[in-house]
Image 1 (cartoon, one colour):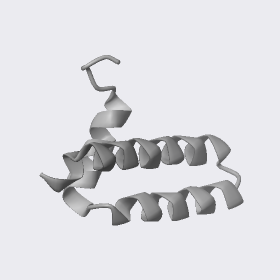
Image 2 (cartoon, rainbow, N blue to C red; image 1 turned 180 degrees about the vertical axis):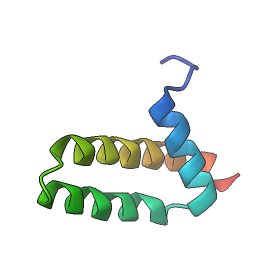
Image 3 (cartoon, rainbow, N blue to C red; image 1 turned 135 degrees about the vertical axis):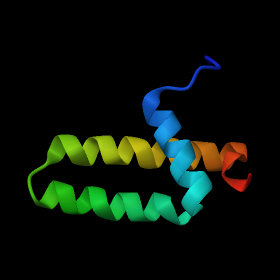
Image 4 (cartoon, helix red, strand yellow; image 1 turned 90 degrees about the vertical axis):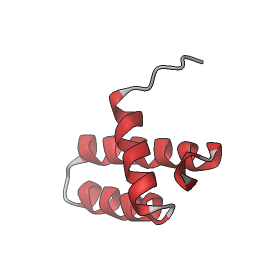
Length: 64
């Protein structure tokens, strides 16, 4: 695995550090709303950010 973070991972890390683990749930709710409104690409990206945020939390980076 590369030590370099993607832009999406940097966004996720910033969000998890700022808002804590609750951001994962909030992002999933936002993604669900986007999907209901027909913005499937946006929903997919938001879920990817939520997943990256959860990975950062599990690595311990959300507890800095």
